[in-house]
Length: 302
Image (tube, rainbow, N blue to C red):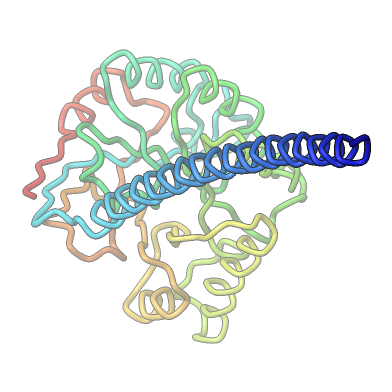
């Protein structure tokens, strides 16, 4: 009898153990299931978010592509492009007094520009005038150190853009801009640089080889030294001919700017290598400057 009871007790204990094992197994399986479900949920959320992000990125990319390829049917722009030389009160014994604009006069002009809603542009933006309504371009030829001393503080004060036409071989020379000064101005985002040739010689008086050296090597040097892309050749003393233009095209210049000629009208001045400028001289009153500015306009047909 005791043997039978012992067997029943052992059998009962075994059943309890099996029952407990089943419970444990169920709990483990349930836990694993919950973890798997959570993982699936997380994965689905990540997948949904990824699809959403991809869709958003695709839409943004498509919009950027559409904007990039969207070009206006026509643009008719009137842009006063001013040409400056020296910004100095005292012109010393220099005979060409009109090249020396007073810094105070320059400041009056910059103040007028900003207070009347005109938009300063770089020369390399002449090809994208559809982005502006009242564009004006300020260019400085030769660019001796006087601009850094007397002009750069003013363009920072009034937050305007200026294009400097650099004589490459003059850099770091007497009374000229240093490499560090040019880089500082470029870093401001308010200055762009273009080529005024290597040594500022009248191009039509040179041989073709000399012309190539002046036009091409100045571009190569400036681009290499300052890690920029040049678009414009500024002809020394406004001197150029068809041969000069062909070399400029070959070198990769998009524009050539003369010394005189008045306001730039895009529908009239279709030769992009003979863009006219307005001589901003020492005697120019603010009323004359304002009169030129009043012409600034852009009409765009999309």
